[in-house]
Image 1 (spheres, rainbow, N blue to C red):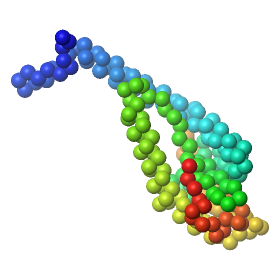
Image 2 (image 1 turned 90 degrees about the horizontal axis):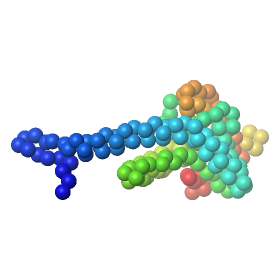
Image 3 (image 1 turned 45 degrees about the vertical axis):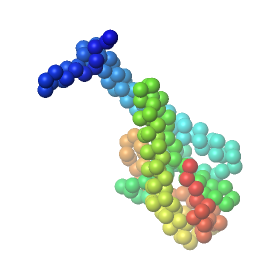
Image 4 (image 1 turned 180 degrees about the vertical axis):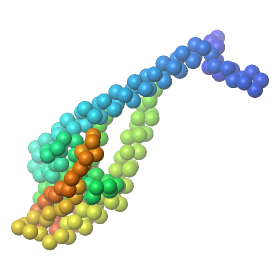
Length: 186
């Protein structure tokens, strides 16, 4: 029979040295994993976002892609606002707001935690879409069109440096009175 991980003796708890080594290995692996996840996000998130834009274009969806101007950019309502848009796309009838999330591989003992984090991130995005992004976009689409386009003023921020600048993009006039049901999040 192996020695248990914790042994309570009187008012003290003792940890088995063998189990402590295993725990230290798991902690070290967790730290290495966090470092690797940050590396993957930093270096491959932009590639994933470009791939999504390419797929959307292949499907006939026009995109207002903030990444084409400066690497790793997100659109925001204003300089310090609380939401961002990774990619905005549209077809003849609908507008699509796309949130790109990178995948982070997890060691076997962190799979449940990783799934939980992905679900929480999806919930947060859905909430921000409903409460902030969609109303903001509907409000901006009520601006009087000029030359067949609705110009929307916003702010563009580089993710890595947090440097930003005012930015504008245009949507076709046909979206001026779009039904909120035709603005989708993905």
